[in-house]
View 1 (tube, helix red, strand yellow):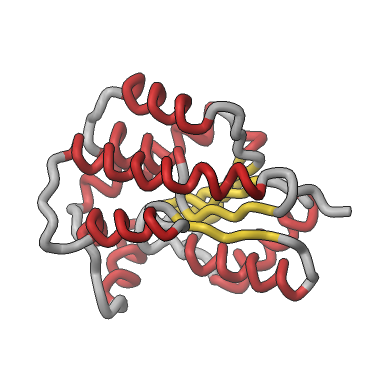
View 2 (cartoon, rainbow, N blue to C red; view 1 turned 90 degrees about the vertical axis):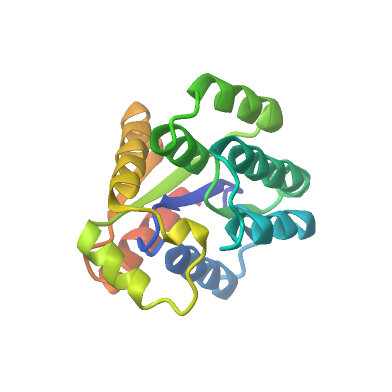
Length: 203
């Protein structure tokens, strides 16, 4: 009987995290494992509405409005997570670490303020494992250039992405047993095998 864990995929733009979470979802489906897959912002119907607002290229919110919109999207997802926790494997494309990496390390918003709201929303919801995908600046740029549509968060400068990625790594180092760093400069096939092997160990 498989464990019904909450597994998160994190990383800056161009790291392949969305590809890998989709590949894990295909693997779970093939092996008839019960799971749900959500993304942040997004996931539930209302959260997807907020996602369009946040990522719209015409939006020009200040960093505090951005933060509160992301947390609002998370609030809408909490019920979905609560309904499935312990019943299905929960795969999440970005979660609380992204909020800290982008809004605290990237934009300088007070960490305690972010943690207070996150803790209030999550209460007893704990993340079991996180795959942190990292990439160098060159490969990130090349991958973003191949995208047909770039959203507002695909267009920050290199200094910002560097601060965010270093923030993710700082988070990982605080609790390394619950993280696996994936070097996205390596081939996708190589990383797919590493991730699926770890998924098998976890569940």
